[in-house]
Length: 510
Image 1 (cartoon, rainbow, N blue to C red):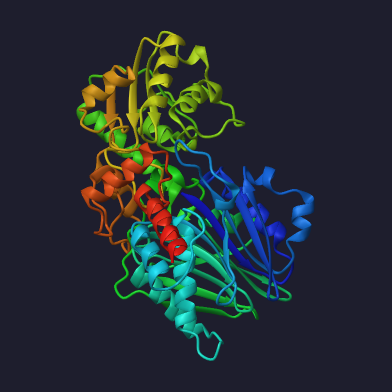
Image 2: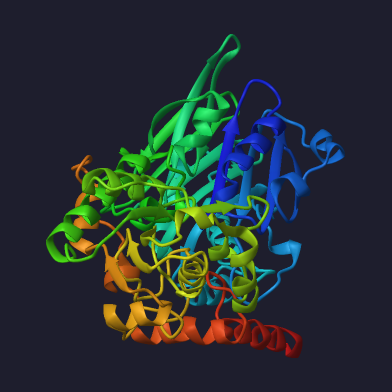
């Protein structure tokens, strides 16, 4: 999960990009970067850290130009990374290209081999985003006529990317002297929207991971970028778009609606907030049908994502809704913090219970999902220490039993609490008196009912079905093995890093 933004405006874009990245900060807190375009010249600044910490006044002054892209990256477990792997990435051949990517390529290792042996291109980091950039650069070169690009040639290059790359990717890029390019993978797994702003000088265009960035920056939402579609805004501000995939289908990541996206965003025509309300309604129906024996006194959300679901659940069951936990907003989100030890430490730092809401009561805690269970266990313990008589736990999402390979830092199957455990065993593990999970069919219905154009969802972390069709047991074992070696999900696996060493050795020997 990362956040991307790109803009072509009539005035300098550095402040627009900075403000947009702050709005998208929830999508990544590890690193941030901005590249602006001034004619044929790029200006770049990127580093590890939050947006507010990465960019100083002197940095902003150097980001000149009316066109640019930005990226926020989220960290992955068990490793600290060089700022060189912050995005956007840059290559100077064939035209000078910068690129930011949200998602994960699932055939990175094969692409690395092809880039080195066939395309004669060098990848300098372990990031699959740099691999994607070099594939795009090669395809642009292959479709160039007389050293000049046309919109048709650029769209043909994107079609070549679609043929070669597998997995999930929403991309913003700039091509020096040509304009802003944005495209989305043929399955539409990761989100991407486009908007415009009418000014006295002409129309400005902005693409971003979520519609909330358009709202805050004063742009009007035009539409979502379609799966497989590419959008080009040239240096003169002309807007071009074309479908570049042979058989596109819309299958957005359902976890965006459960947890990742801001509630005020609309993704693929579906309001995230309304979806979370409906998730609460479905939970209420399940409790009425299967858990009516529970004597619930109060419903308390675990801040912040679960609030809409918990509120609607309370309304449907005609039970009191109370805020029982206060969140310290200066502590990073637990889900995206590296390392289990830090995760255990951070829960107490970022949440504190209001004793009066728990004392002597049977409490139903509502969270958006349960992944590792570490946070859930500590929160249940906090509720008991605050005086709760019984603690029930409801998840607005189904059990997370499988890794996500499309750009979310889901743990290995061994780390996932629900893997090979029954609901009763999970309840015992987190210390709850009862556990209620959302049903997968209900979740799919809750998200999809407002947009019949959605073909399906990537719900792989819940059902183990990977919609790209190329994920094997061997692939999952390799991903899990790389995590145990301290590698980054979404980057080259241990075997592909060894490939770098082997290839370098061959080159030195030659």
